[in-house]
Every structure is written in structure tokens, then in C-alpha cells.
Image 1 (tube, rainbow, N blue to C red):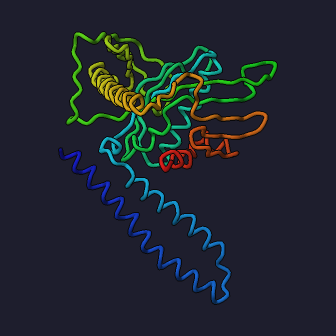
Image 2: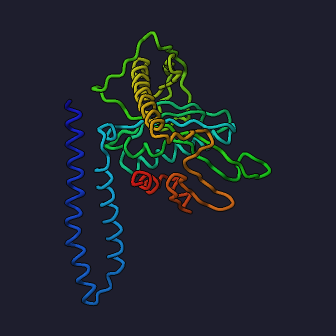
Image 3: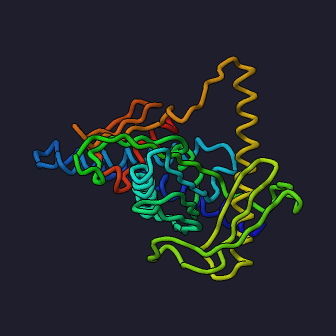
Length: 311
């Protein structure tokens, strides 16, 4: 309860600070406009100020559009490459880096809970925990299939390749949300952790993999040196995925009732990242696009997320 109250307080404090900043901005803008009338060359300052003001307005508006408490929660992101071996595994690792950079830009903490390295390059799977207010509310926009088109660095003939990777996003579940998990429904295995090392992961010999037999959901955790802690974290991830599964069932039932059911297939990507023969990143749900592909892959994702949420 104390954690929930602290989260609510921070949310209200953040909204108040943005609102106060907007009110103060009105006075600053009026001053700049007066200087412009007097012949001062302040056009660049006015443009920069308006861009910043618009960003703050959008930030405040988006936070008020989140209606569910769950949207304030931390988020798990799981990434899995599609068919294509090394190509797709490398693409999955590029996405992992992109999300880590994006979260760092937003001031959110990131923990790599599980990562399985590919044989030659890239990753076979990875799960990260993003800790920050509204992390799930914003990151849920990233769930879906992501498509990459580029000249393959693994092809000696320099041919163009298309790769796919799936991104799943789940909310971290509060203790006050009850998700029943029977011990008899679980198969728990331990294994040696694998990964690229570095600041985001502690390679240990106590990694845990849990299979939820009724649903077939598989979760893993390897970031702690304690097998007990890894098991507890894996159970939290499983709880989040079961919660997400229940939400999807409800959404599917709602779509059926509204006769708007839409097939979700591996090829129905939400976003395309083209690096050759031109550079373009386009969200196929909203139509938002940019030619700054390098910036997007370096974590500049908020314009895509905002477009999705505002839509």
C-alpha cells in the first residue's frame, strides 16, 4: 500500500510540475513576443520555446489519457527473433539495444532478466524489466512484429535481406492483483546462464526456467546469483504474462462481439525499418514515418509511441 501511495504522489507531483512549467511558459512567451514587436531578433528563441512547450503539453495530455492504474506500472519487454537464423537474431539484438537506449533517455531503469545468445551473432531471446512511472502505459505501444530491410552484414554477396522479430510487452503486476498459479501447473528447470555480459547482466550458474503447463508459457531469469531470487523473478514475469493473456482474451471477445476481429499473423508487422535502398522507419498502424532511421535505432521512439497513443 505504501508503494502504491508513493507512486500516486510522484504521479501527481510530476503532473503538477509540468502544469506549472506550462503556466510559467506563458509569461516567457509573452516576453519574447514583446521583444519581437520591439524589433529584437528572437525568432529562433520563439521557435525553440514553442517546440519545447508543445512537447510538455503533449506529455501532460498523454499522462491524463491513461485511464487504468496498471498503465502506471513497470513493464517487461520480451524480444524473440523470427525465422532467418543469424539475420533475425542480430535484428533482435538491435531492438534490445534500441529499447535500452529509449528507456535511458526517459530516465527509466533497465534490468536484463534473461538473454540467450545466438550461435554466431545476435540473441535468441531476451527479457528486460523497465522500472519507471507509466513505463507500461508508453511501452505497450511497441508490442508486435518489427520488420527490418537492409544489406546483410552476414552475406558475402551483399544482398538485401528482410528480418522479423516479435516484441511482447507486459505490465509488472502489483501484489494487490491476484493471479492464481498452482505449483502442479509448473515445470521448473535450472541451467547455466548465457549472454554477452556487461553492465546489464550478471552471468551466473543459477538461472531458472519455468514452464506453465496449461498455457505453454515459458519464462526465464538469470540476472541474480541466487537461484531463489531468479525463481521469484521468473514467477513475477509469469504472473505478468498470465495477466496479459487474460486481457487479450477479453479484448478478443470484445472484437468478436463488435464483428471487428482482425487476424494477427507473423507477417502483420506494426513497423518497418528500411535501411536500404533508402532509409525510412514507418509505423503501419498510424502512418507516422521518419527518414532518421539511425536516430530511431538509437532510441528516438517517443514520436512513434505518441502517435500511437494519440490515435
